[in-house]
Length: 328
Ligand code: SAM
Ligand code: DTB
Ligand code: SF4
Image 1 (cartoon, rainbow, N blue to C red):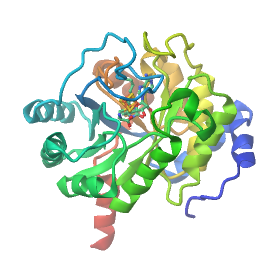
Image 2: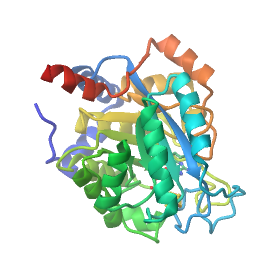
Image 3: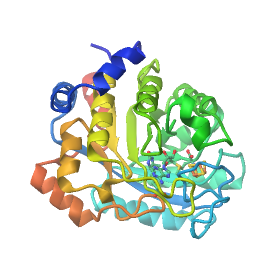
């Protein structure tokens, strides 16, 4: 059965508010029906251009207008990026996501350099992902030709709450880029953040926007806010595990075939809490000691977690391989 794109707010609300044990069970069943049990995708992030961003995203360490103490860096060199990608591959990652603190991609020399980085990382055999801000279909097509597999562009929260968090671009702007990614034929990675002061209704509406896209994002990252000193959200309390589990379960049920990524926030979650997230259908993580600018669990800790839970890494380009085999 192909995934539905006609969810109502009422239906998603009912799912989100299901008694927790029943919710996890349902999500787990759907997960088992649609994915290889215990298989988790391992992704590595690299910030290729850090800080100094024009935007005012209230959660972000990289917005120039907040004093977060972050050291701004211009675009990394090709060699540094390739070195990091090789290290990531050796450590077991299959996806490498390059992030830039840009509002949008501009057709300039830095973009040309990013195209060469995409080409280089792709040649190493990693799935290449970019998260470079808003982008046109033409720019994404150029990245695709260079070897880009996925483009990450989060909608972050509900349309209603968006302007409380970001005023320098709109939810609609983000949706436009999602359309451009699809038109260019690159896979879509889009999710959001919880713990920014939004209501459960906002969370539900965010999932409604994603789950009602004609084609669901292939990856849905669910981030718990990493509160950053100096940003307007510096005093937000840590997200509780139960909310994270509800969010992951609801994403899993409404977008059964997507990869659901347990993204930022793992450092402050216990192994038990993360185990519940995997049980509820999360099947992707960011590995490596740093996300973009903030710390993440060490590779050793994650290795231990995988051993305890009996999780195995998902091979790279798995869906492409499946297609290839079917065409033989
Ligand atoms: N500048 C690009 C953009 O905005 O799309 C790419 C980088 S941006 C840092 C990518 C995503 O990281 C954001 O959309 C947000 O969902 C997530 N993110 C950023 N800072 C975060 C934080 N402090 N806690 C949790 N997630 C965060
Ligand atoms: C996503 O959803 N989360 C990642 C990635 N996509 C780009 C970023 C998390 C950033 C956390 C804060 C930081 O390290 O700056
Ligand atoms: Fe800039 Fe992206 Fe951070 Fe927003 S989330 S301030 S666009 S780097």
